[in-house]
Length: 224
Ligand code: DER
Image (cartoon, rainbow, N blue to C red; front, side, top):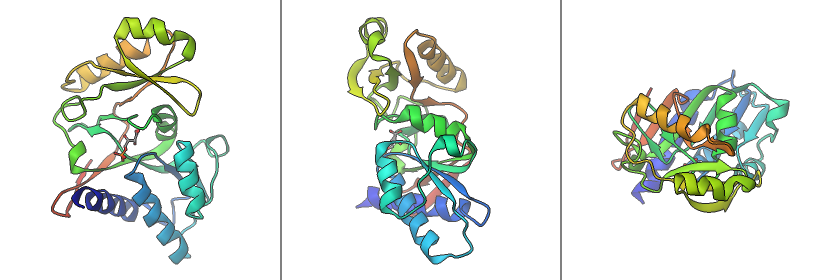
């Protein structure tokens, strides 16, 4: 269908543009779009002897399994604290490439891997592109909190939840409305991250260097 084709086209374009003989350590995000990144990466890993992919770093149990099943070299962030390029999806992307991520409950590990990467590349279908965060994605901003703080925080920011993360923490979805412009996005993140017990938010500010957006007509738009 159109959405899956858009995800695939965006992912293949991103891998083909950023993977070369100099990319040795690769971060693998979470969600359904990044599956196509791994598919394309595995094809090239198997067919191009010139590639020297040494380590693929997962951002979740799902990413871990994707890497294993694709026959790519699985490694952990502590063994490769500097990553050449990371590919990940997003729930929403604005014109400055700020993202809401975490719809799949993995944004803490995703942000760690993205922050450790020289290049962070987002791949998505056309549904994720938005003029301001909060317009297309109306399920709130995922906020990871430690269990002991859950009720206190929920009273403070009226979040919906919880789901349990790979780190054993809980996720609250917090509704802060439409965040127009960098200042509003940054203010929202700071409001949340300074609450005692909050581990990380799903606001990825100024982290993505590129976004590959698959369109319904089969074309791919690159934002950078
Ligand atoms: O949870 C996440 O951050 C994922 O990357 C998610 O935002 C993207 O998932 P999708 O590719 O299945 O839409």
